[in-house]
Image (cartoon, rainbow, N blue to C red; front, side, top):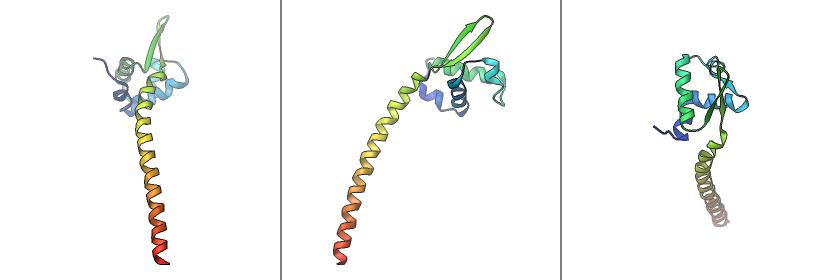
Amino acid sequence: MRRDVFQAIADPTRREIINLLAYQSLNLNEVAVNFNISRPAVSKHIRILTECGLVVIKQQGRERFCEANLGKLKEVSDWAEKYRAFWANKLDALEVFLAKEHKSIRKSKV
C-alpha cells in the first residue's frame, strides 16, 4: 500500500523520527534508542516513512542507514500555504471591516 506524507506526519513518533534524521543519517538501532518503544515498533514507523518517501534507507556494508528526504514535505507545505493565504485574506477583510465599524461608532458618539 502506498501511503501519503499526511499519514506519515500524523503520528508524533514519526514526526520525531523525521526530526532526528533531518540533522544526520542514523542506523536503525541509533534511531530506536531515542524512543521508549520496541525496536519492531520503530521499524514499523520507519517502514511507513519509507513508503511515503520521507525516509530513504541506504545499505552501507552490514548497516542500514536512514536518511530524511525533506523535499517530500513540500506537499504539506503547499497544502498549508493555500489555507494560510485564505485565512490571511479573511483576517485582512475583517480588519478593514472592524476599522470601518470603529470609525462609524466614533462618529455617532460625536
